[in-house]
Length: 524
Image 1 (tube, rainbow, N blue to C red):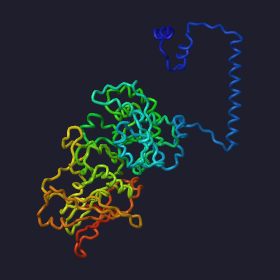
Image 2 (image 1 turned 135 degrees about the vertical axis):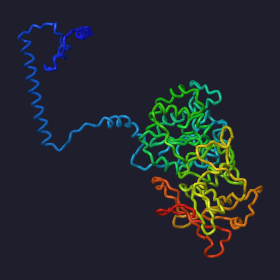
Image 3 (image 1 turned 90 degrees about the vertical axis):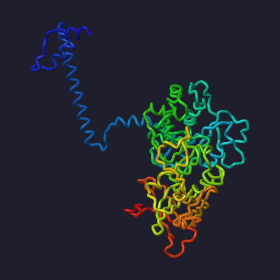
Image 4 (image 1 turned 60 degrees about the vertical axis):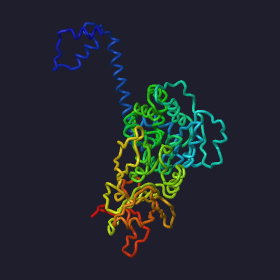
């Protein structure tokens, strides 16, 4: 350091016409130091230079001959390839054959539950769990007092595990529950089981209803060897503001790829302590993922259902996306009139099992002869308007519900339209009554008219023909899951018996089909 300072302090200037390395030489060998050459000092450098040249010449000749007469190629791996192989070497022994299409066996489910409430809420999980098909566990806070009841007479029981003790972790959210810490660690405990052939870890609550076949289709779009965090937001803006817009809400379920889980488990425990003020487990997990730098990949079929009241408006105008999950069904009215919550779900699940990809998919069509508009939410409901209503309005959810926290009529993360008190502006409502599989891979669903006992009936003359329709039959081809890999588009439908060949009667028959080129739902 003193040598450099002394050089910066001199008045010498550099002549750029001279050897440019002289100035650097003065840095390495100060000029005020004198060396006395000897005969040995002259001989050794000359010998070293000659030896180096000789070795270099021989090596060059050998390399040229090798390349000329060998059919092998010499290359170095790219930098990112080396890092990729390093980070995925252990992953490949766990995820199996990466060329195989993702299926249900590649998913490990982690359901957060409580020993005290599990037997009251297990019916939600039993709707979708298939023994020897689905893999995973319900994670409880303690061993149930009567473990044999966990296996009940039901054929759809879930195996359970008891979570590790989390009393050593910090939790300081005054309005939350410490169980959020335990729930956040379910992902880590699931990962550490070391089960074979796992590509995705899917987290949910004990009141989450998952539609597994559609979940497989959604996750199959993504490479599990990449870091993905897949889920959906809350429907209530107030929830997203309080918690996060960038979070996949845990009640609706979320999926984490194996590649991301391998990174996340290394830092999760530290994150849980760092974010001890956060309310829920899903919020803590997302905070950890933000440190890794992985954002949410939103899929519209995950439904947190942070709403109160009647979910009809949401389900009757489902987005063009596969139905993946429901949550908070204990806090909502039954999906179908005159049925309990669980019986309503069983009815919808029955339609789903007949055609998973088509469930709740909305289809719109017109009867231009009668100026009618029809909206079908397959497997659930049909709306018949005795007027021509724009596709924009038909595709907007009825406001049959309120926000989760304040029970206000919004705002929500999607558009809504009010339910008019005028009976002449309301459609006729029809709910699923039955489903039949026909030949050639088709189904016929029947929807029967429902009139609430307190509902006023429109007495306009032009409304009378619509009131005569007692049921609607919908014929549809089996939905091909590969359609979800294409650009999303709502399918089209047409009314088969529009009255042109005689009396319409009390039944309307529709046929769902793919849309033709240049076809649009445009009223005259």
